[in-house]
Amino acid sequence: GWARRLERAVSAFERPTAVRGERALRLLAARDAFSVSDLERMASCSSAWFVERYLRPATIDKEIDRMLRGSILHAALQRFYQQLPSVVPGAERVTEQNVEAAVALVRDCAAQAVETGLRIDAGDLERRELEQSLCRDLEQLVRDEAQSESPLVPRHLEVLFRSFELEPGVVVSGKIDRVDGDPMGARGLVVDYKSGAASSAAQIRERDLLQLPLYMRVLRDQLGMEPMGGVYVPVGGGRAARGLLRASDDRVPGFHARDYLEPDEFEAIVDGARDTAVALVGRIRAGDVRHDPHGGECPSWCDLWRMCRKERA
Image 1 (cartoon, helix red, strand yellow):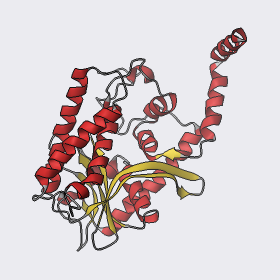
Image 2 (tube, one colour; image 1 turned 90 degrees about the horizontal axis):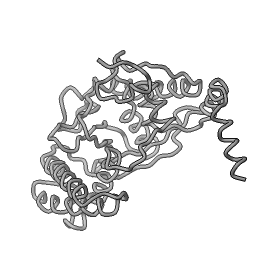
Image 3 (cartoon, rainbow, N blue to C red; image 1 turned 45 degrees about the vertical axis):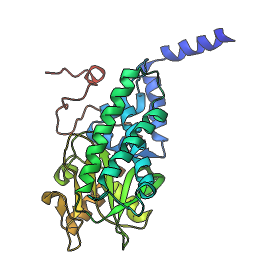
Image 4 (cartoon, helix red, strand yellow; image 1 turned 60 degrees about the vertical axis):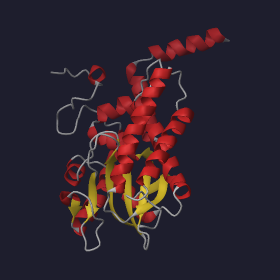
């Protein structure tokens, strides 16, 4: 009965650390699929990855945190792009001509997303603050898109992939926020929404950022579209989109000049991301976890120092 179950639980808790460590190693070695975001976190610091993505500590009280806000924001944007062609007949994208109608629509979509997505016991003030901040940020995004020079239009939203094989035995999963496509061709641009600042092409290369390069492989191999690049689009704050784009005669215009790379360099980063991801999978399966923040120093925003026991200045 319950007494025996309690005795087993206490016995497992008191088991020597080495035994529990061996079990964790077996579980890691047996993993057969990895999310792209997990691998990117592993690349930034394997100790932080272990705490956040394997141990997964959580607070007792639910709150409107960054992840919940991001989930509601994504839901609002998906509604917006799905409904835009019917609310603004014939509109495939936001333009200067339809921007006011688009702003009204995105505000309505934000309200609907908060109503259906906020599934915790939040007060009226918290709910209103969340909705107002989302409306402000999404309106800025819509007005920025109306000014965009890109001729591409939203083609795919929330593209989920569960078993994309990088090489035999290495399978990744993830979700692409949006894919913009060429109205007259099969070219595509990966779009990933960010709550903070966007990373440039140089930062993607230097920090082993995997999302955009690996998403471009999915774009090519799973959706059959030729990747012209990928960009991080900050939502709110008026920050510019940055990313990794192919420099060519038919390049996608409107982005930072330093983010356009010659085709050989562009492909090298995409291929390099695959190699990095495969190496990180090998480390996870081997249980190779240590304090190794990228660049050697803990970032100021990381709040896991109490768990990895690194003193902060």
